[in-house]
Length: 397
Ligand SMILES: *Cc1c(COP(=O)(O)O)cnc(C)c1O
Image 1: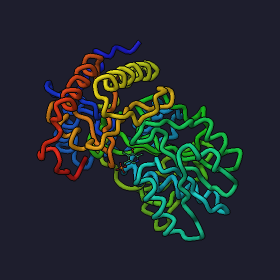
Image 2 (image 1 turned 45 degrees about the vertical axis):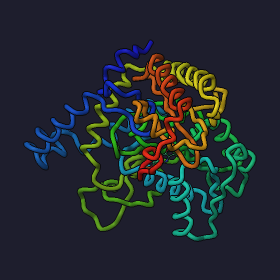
Image 3 (image 1 turned 90 degrees about the vertical axis):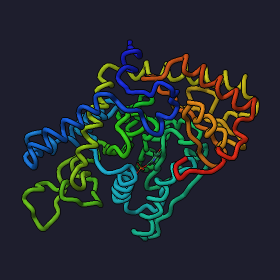
Image 4 (image 1 turned 180 degrees about the horizontal axis):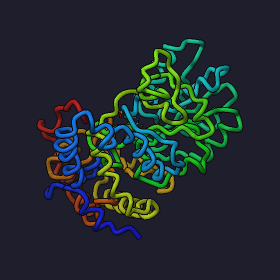
């Protein structure tokens, strides 16, 4: 059994805040402060360039990849860290397309995150060859898979509504049509059990600053199934993905396996913060996380529906069809969220009208959820949101 009092103590949480936005940026793990300071002072400061070897910096992308692999049901040696999620989407998609050279369609849905769709549009423009990005409703994806589709590229948990795709069923349908799959796990990794190997997923990508608490701009990950790892063409042929980076050859040769998905020099300070953040997972059972996340989100839905009749549930009501977030629609959702934040409850807003709340059992308790619902009720009942201060939009919402 996971001891959630212990996991909560792992984080440095402001005393006057209830944090319901760990799905956007996880909180600070106390140990990350120490780890990054030590790396800066001892390794960077004293070891200088030697630290690439002496502190093992050069191996971090692969080592941390193995730690993430355990959280997403992927075998060791199938995940590597680096760059941003947008870049990893590009890499996975270009590799998948190269494995299906005769097919023209990238299939995705309109619940996918914009950057995933933008990367696909950019790649279509770059490659030409009659490629097409086909975007359907999330519920229509399975039926839209056919033999024209090179790849189906989906985010497992919808960033706005929390709707959860059936990874196993969609992957199976895709494979029957000879179509490859790319799963974006941005809102899955660390939020719920994922079984990439069980689903036989071909590619997966994700970020580590959301439920994995790696810090702002933490490195992303990419998984390539062992079946494809030796054939996948790394379109971003960087020197760290070369078979022998320090031979400095003029000709690119891909490294064996997943290492070829590395690009350039890894962001070590971010990796060290992430390494510290990942320690908490050693004492966590993701089945417990899922169970408690469902308890907390069901409690929130029940409380908000009872207390705030103006808010309409935008997430699936069935917890089995939902990730670890709950969203409500409200016409003045932006102002209401700003008011809520000003009253100590941090969630976020997604245009046009979605108030989004993330439930993260590692540091959230039932009492936090009840208090958050009370504060939200007050903001709605007393129309505290109806105030010019809360209407002006910031750059990040
Ligand atoms: C958060 C998120 C991203 C963000 O990509 P970055 O390159 O890290 O900015 C991409 N895709 C999905 C599905 C996300 O939820």
